[in-house]
Length: 334
Image (cartoon, rainbow, N blue to C red):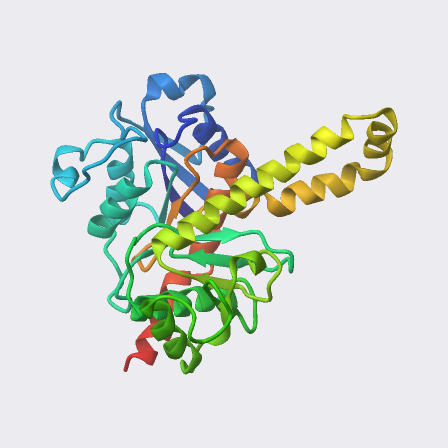
């Protein structure tokens, strides 16, 4: 049985969408047990009785606007839904955690609770993003570290490459370095140095520099940059996808024949288009580099998106992702 801890009060739409997404996962996967931490009274309208659903009560949780997270957070806020979930994993009662709570709080708390693997020098936020080639694609670091060193980017590339190859069957994951131009000399000192290290690395299939305009339509499966740049890229993609969908809706509604064509001939194509660009379809973001799978679902996750984040955690546990990454990085560093 795969045991997943869920922060029931994290996210803009908690607890309703978190609970509904968790219940959907239990119904879809017969090998998953979910323990959800949160306010029983607030969750009650959405909960069901189920042998593979356990509820642990706490009426305390992190506000989505929380800031000034520090070491004392783990002590003074130990009874919040997020930290109780993390402690549950730390103590060995669950195999992974999923939370849509504030990113800074989750990264900081998981770093000191779950602990980083010794094989990596930094942790990173690593979401799966949509790509036209249709294969799994990972963007990192999408906000974990505003500043990074070139060797950190190399670690991130190795981590993502191992996950894609060993878990998702991408035989030769291509790694692209997000930059303002394709030439080797482009970018900041960080980018130039990282380029040389990635190019010469034996376990990385390096594509080269990748301009932002190519991200959705490139051959790359791993997109690399520091947390500030990659976070901007991720949010720009999300906004673009939403805007494109709204433009299509506007144009279709303009005339009778457009509506007729959409209804009769284009419905399936438009549905597939929406899915291919939707962040809801690809689960949450991995906190790469930790001892156990920690999945950061989008703060505005609905039930469907949160279900996919749980699905992602389940897959990582099933495929023993963390130990596979440790094995590759460990042998590489010997």
